[in-house]
Length: 280
Image (cartoon, rainbow, N blue to C red; front, side):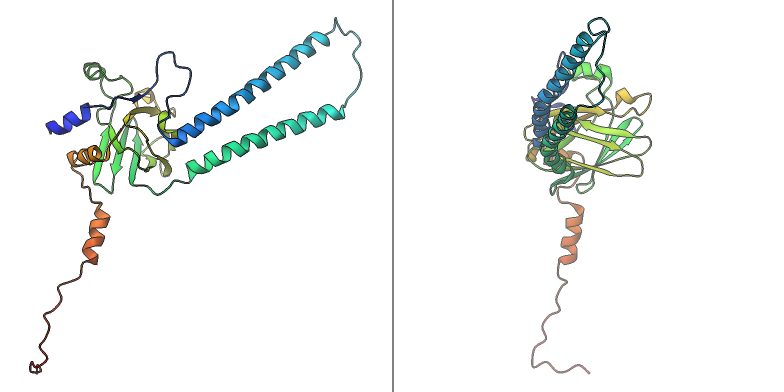
């Protein structure tokens, strides 16, 4: 028990969490989030350029064609060149954006084979995690403020029972809800999936460096929506296995144990000597 408490309290050095005065994304901890950040950095200059262009055109129209500077307006209804430009250019911009965005969406939707599967169930207002293949069940609630201060952990982000995942392995999350709509979101992972009652949404991630990563419910789910944090600790495979044992789980998935038992041959009968008399 003491070893388990020590394991829970020993957080890895890196922490994926909001920072005071921050204006950018959290440092990405997965390849998916890295792709999202790259796409953001690609599309932001396009958005800024379009915004500035529209602002300049509006200012030019206001200054050049107001009642005082242009008391007698020209009377025309069409300009073929302008209409072609403002139709073709936005289409080309959207095509370029689509070429960059579709592969990212495809990678997020097509989860690779997973070494770990976690079923995440949201409820008002806490999270429940089930490692069904390993026999581990974790109920995760907001860590009270006094305990968070005593443990020097971030209040409103830290939880009483964080979950553990191994570094460098594909983790699939099956996300659902027991009541209203919630959203399981960990910014550093690039994962944001709604939890809906009666439906299971699938997400996945592969953390590439050890650390403690925080998230929160990102769907307005009720009065305690702001008190529904997520804490995931990415650790080495030996430390993850030690945590599984501390939680009372088994490192051998039950399904594989059952399959091995079924595949084991039954005791074969003793061979009968060739000269043995025939049984009546």
